[in-house]
Length: 150
Image (cartoon, rainbow, N blue to C red):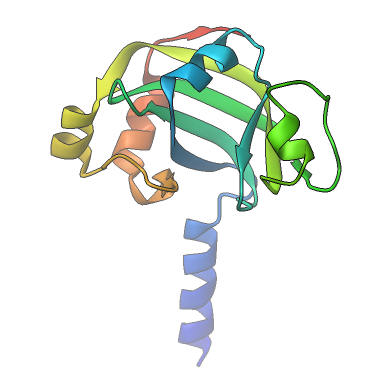
């Protein structure tokens, strides 16, 4: 019995990075452009991703992993955010969660979908991909050269 409790605690410690969850999400280029220009300051989703700190962004039409977004807070509808054309769908309840983008980085050398598939067995995310399950890719991303946009 003691062995099972110890084993369970080890699994929890190994799999729990606390507030450092990293995910890969897909965003269309028209939105990544607005994010890069600091016009779109939130990423909207219908689902909650607890403990999220970093979103790695796969740009869908270009088929490349290009950006790193650091998230500092999550706003839940019906709490509203700055009222403008970009945020209106969130403010009327179309999306339930607004992830505030605190910092944005752009990879100097984006990673293509072909490389993601062949080297890391990672495919274009439909919802999101937990990168804790792809530690080799996550390790590479943390070492990659990047440009701080803001």
